[in-house]
Image (cartoon, rainbow, N blue to C red; front, side, top):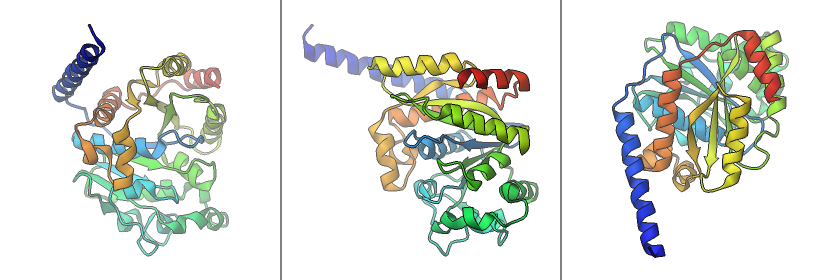
Length: 309
């Protein structure tokens, strides 16, 4: 068999696998959670696909029937951009919510991505919020208070709330951790994948101890996975050995379509819903929904985090 025939065979196998995976997804129904799942997406290491994961998982869950809210807590506002939500300085945003000038309902916007997906945008004003929050009462709990009030008063039932926070640990990230029940950590399958993870897990333990005892790392998603390289397989194996219960079976491949979508102000599902990247996020969303929040015993979680660190 010459090289052309080999390539043709590989392409054919790839298409067959893609069709099989799509068919499997179409045949499954993702269960909706009994109570709203509030998930902070965090990794203090930059460039791991944190915002990309936030918006694409949220979009995938919306497409599978869930009502989803994304709170953009990153001053860069990339999640707002990807969801087609205006976030000019004059727009009512999460900044106004944190300072107590507006409720979440006032800042809520529909997205251009899907009718089930909504967003509370970030604006450039949020860049100064760290300083302004310092003097406020209950500064670490501003977002949680606003979110709880919103969920109780809203006419719409939200199944998922995703909070996209900055990569640094400041008052914005602390607010995200205090408001959430779960932490989702995207980890890229490249060199130094676990760099900074020990510090992140230590910070989460501090939040558990002092501010939010119910917080837990529920989900770890492997991103930028290239099955052709030994490195990606080794990194995936290492992460799975440390966190066997948290790591999703679904992995997000290195994908041109995933990388291109943000430059068009879209999620990968809106940009190219037939791409392998969109399929991978749909599979991750379905698995996340199927697994549920999974509340492990506190002592078991602590042991696993110590081991992973």
